[in-house]
Length: 359
Image (spheres, rainbow, N blue to C red):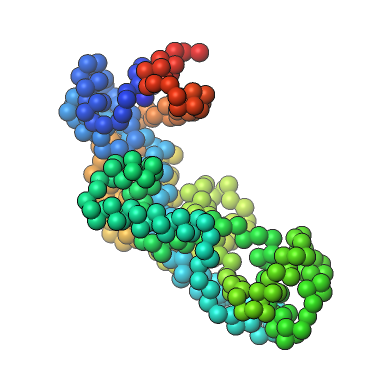
């Protein structure tokens, strides 16, 4: 979808986003002076071929999104270290009782974990047969970004992300107390009594959930209580948001994470410095930021800095000029509404006509 940023209206809709299609359109409609775009390389190739005199402007929102991905990857790399640090620093809720030793539990065979495992195997099997990303996307009915993520990410990291998406439930904050009481009583304690005890501590779940957990403790199949650490996505959200928008509790937890892992501290400092360049349009400091990131940043942040260097002119323009493709996002939402209303049964030509017809 091509939008006139000055007039704020859609000028055309193309059947795909390949460089050949876009270059052909630019040749048929010469005169473009400024082209706002996301980070897709197909757009850059088309502009250089069909409109070499046009000024390319990288969209600021997409830059921050790419930065957020790099920060989250950095946090993912240190999940186990953060957990170990929190477990060493955490004071037991019932100090007079030794914690119950439970066997390490394997990943539960939930639907999302099994789906992640099978999807990883299917994609890598097709990659070994030299299938392209687009072909795998069509075969598996997945977005190309999803296929690339399964190609470039370790299975353990994908399974960890799938596990974190499972809801902890209302009993999770009270499991440490239940385990300690169960051990102290040498398993001779009723579920009703423990239910009343944790209910007085704020538990709002059912009695059946408590009995089920005690049955798993007696059978030796209960999962060990894991340390309460923020997920990589939550840490990333704290880093990417302005400091003044965080609560005191969020600032405190982010400080604990920074103290635990120097790499996350460095990623946080670089991310906030880059966000400051974006928000205040200080493009003249971009090259210095890239040099600092390439010097001592974690690997994901170095990769992000390398991508910026490859697209230096467009990114500098995006951090200097007022132009952006923000006006496009409103039309994107409108297009999604039209597509849902058509239930996918109409042709591209009809969809294009409806998009170009102004309400």
